[in-house]
Length: 404
Image (cartoon, rainbow, N blue to C red; front, top):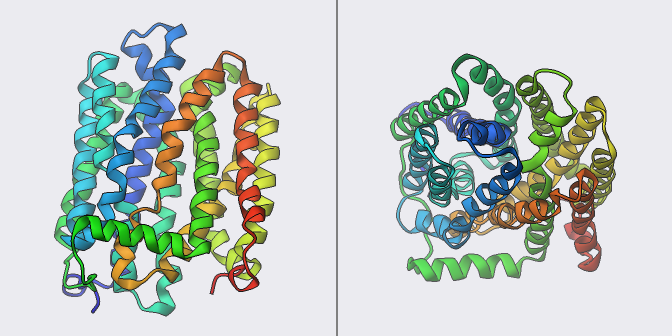
């Protein structure tokens, strides 16, 4: 059976709402990442301690996410997909309001650790979307939903710069909390959950075992998990510290410089995500991921060597375009190949490698920060090649080199 939505609400409306939800989520978190150094300074953290606090906040915020992440998809299949999606937006509103009201970095860290309770919504959204969309429109629907996150990355930093200038960092965070609350209301009112295909065994642990077994039993999905995890560790090794490097390279208004550079990078990734959706089925995921792994490595090396802001920004943009390929591939392949009755459980794990990267990467970057810009970006560049190594070490059969 198919998932039901409200009267007169079709798959395109649901896709647009899910895209808006992921856009708000991405925009808010990217604003937080971009202006965490400034926020910490407002909390009177000494400049020399800012990198350490960035490492702690960026990494520990994902620790709770790791043990919880596998369960959101199976809980969605067991109980309610809609509830899991709405939960994410509601708790996100609490987190950003908490950051806005925090008076010490320890309070901010405590609210950041609630991050584990908001994750797991993307895969469940894709499961709902796949259940409401005609098969011939599924790629388009996934593309619409997938564009929300990069769009948020494009809009978030520059909008954040404007808000910081107008109402300071705390005002920006309250704005994000209000948007998350609005999305909570819209999701509650618009999405109508009906019956969907459920596994015969609906016990949570059995569903989780079934999801893991399905991932392991499908070599292409397993390869994509390994490749995504490696790429995300590399991303998070340098990402939390990029605002600090932009501020160092900027000759003037650092708030605006951070917003402009990161928004350009986000816009490039948003456009690239849509284009990869067209290119990957034609060229095959192996060819695309191989080329983009090398491209990402070169771009990150250039960023590590750059002491001129325009060149640094271009290198970040090229890396973002390359990085967009792997997540686009993972979402498209998994949505199209997993069993319908386990779709929510399996797709609920789609960002698990992202969470692993979020825990490990900032700690690596924090340890390397004192060694200089080249050390941080050099490590990220080396890690960006691991998807290529994974693909060649587990060479897929010809039938799997293109997405049907």
